[in-house]
Image (cartoon, rainbow, N blue to C red):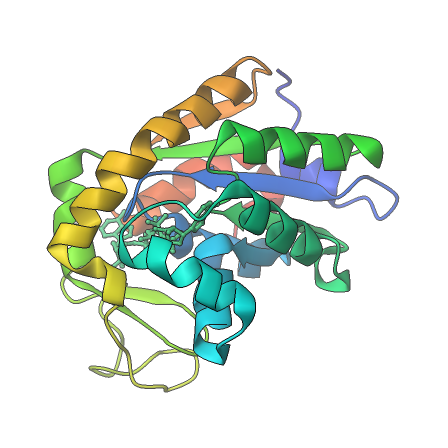
Length: 235
Ligand code: AP5
């Protein structure tokens, strides 16, 4: 592990891409933090859940293949997920680096990602693990509203939009997610937390995991992340 600010190393145009992972259970705040940090750092926000939802909305074969798993709160199989995500990571929009949200979520996905990056002399800089107790997660997801166009999440109590029911960024009417029904949220926690913890163990071995108290207000979590990744992230 190094104390060198991660974000400062990412500012050198000749340097390797800055790749950060945001890890946490359903509703931990990965999307919220990724949305803020991607704008501050000028990095693309790649969210596997958003990619699957976009494929579903377009009715692509990938979306149709993922539908049943998502509706049941299960992980989409690695062979579909890895191919989709690696394609996104190779696109020009990730040339400066990326904030990964929701991928990797199994050790198989983590190994595939590590190998793909290593083949290009790259690596994951930090794994930011947002920890939140289950009862808080369930309350957060119950009050979540999301922009169907840009995927920005809001919360009716803790992070409301400026105009009720409308996205601050593009004015589109906010919606609730189909998989935020309480029974699906329970399934997502039961089935997806154990493989997520195995991913944390995988990266603990490399000494690159930062554990963050995700029960703080949104700005407090952002501040803690800025502190971990370096001065360039400060607004
Ligand atoms: P995905 O969309 O990734 O869902 P998830 O991981 O369950 O995470 P969420 O998007 O629900 O939560 P979040 O942590 O982003 O929280 P948010 O910031 O919105 O995946 C959906 C499905 O796709 C999966 O179930 C699976 O089927 C499939 N899938 C996706 N990736 C996969 C993969 N790699 N492999 C296989 N299958 C995959 O915040 C939640 C709410 O809390 C918001 O209302 C927000 O405003 C509020 N909030 C956030 N932070 C705070 C805070 N600090 N204080 C108070 N409120 C807060």
